[in-house]
Amino acid sequence: GSTLQAAAAESGRYFGTALAASRLSDSTYSTIANREFNMITAENEMKMDATEPSQNQFNYSQGDTILNWATSRGKQVRGHALAWHSQQPGWMQNMEGTSLRNAMLNHVTQVATHYKGKIYAWDVVNEAFEDGSSGARRNSNLQRTGNDWIEAAFRAARAADPAAKLCYNDYNTDNWSHAKTQAVYNMVRDFKSRGVPIDCVGFQAHFNSGNPVPSNYHTTLGNFAALGVDVQITELDIEGSGTSQAEQYRGIVQACLSVARCTGITVWGVRDTDSWRASGTPLLFDGNGNKKLAYNYVLDALNAG
Ligand code: G3I
View 1 (cartoon, rainbow, N blue to C red):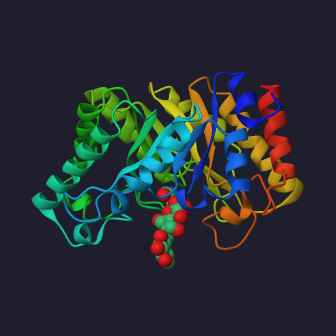
View 2 (cartoon, rainbow, N blue to C red; view 1 turned 45 degrees about the horizontal axis):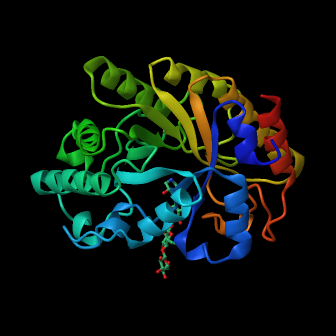
């Protein structure tokens, strides 16, 4: 294949990007996005603060803009994200206890119902585990509603949209030997053993010097897949430049291709200048929309697979 989406499709996988609704009118941006990617994630527009700015007052305008842009071009959509400690609307941030639990479940139900039948996979719960060596759940207002809040969110999402794959999504879960990776693995194993509806695990894959690409990445992906879930690389970006960066991108692609249930890869933005990172050059296209060396390595790795 001569594009990322075509090359990934040769092994039955997708290649995606995050898009911002505010940039779709930039023709350099939208031309690259349309040509290269066949799975679209809304970078911010389907999050809790965007979709429920006032309690029980839902606003899908920006999320629908992304969804319609994608589906009208024959692309699929990853939904991001139904329940998260961050980017909560102001009204939710100071809630606790039963009222918060019910508000969260109502949010999951309402948003998943609005997009019913249109989403390939939802990030149902995002970033619920602590960093570091504790292996604990992250302390958040959602966690304080009870340790079963994650499975409750998954059950609500399944009831609202039975066709969508339901994912748990997190960062710094790439290295198999890290406590956070093990903690997420144990949760997924527990969910599968108890019949909690979970179909996939998303690995955000934001890499930098503090969180380098691990040499055991294929082990991580393979071990999760062996639990009976799909695995996906959901927010890939890698700090750096040149050959070093390109080789790291290649390693990620090869790790995914080595695991049958790694169904696709999404990069977290189009051009370096579109990245959430304030500085740096972590993506596959430079600020002018030119393909970087990392792009060539990714394309070649996809075609070799
Ligand atoms: O839209 C407002 C604008 O009206 C306002 O003037 C401006 C002033 O700061 O802020 C704008 O909102 C910003 C929004 O991005 C849109 O640009 C927010 O401040 C900013 O916090 C927000 O950042 C997003 C971040 O999530 C928030 O947590 C990034 O774009 C987005 O790339 C990033 O994505 C996350 C994933 O959802 C989860 N995993 C990590 C990843 C990277 O942090």
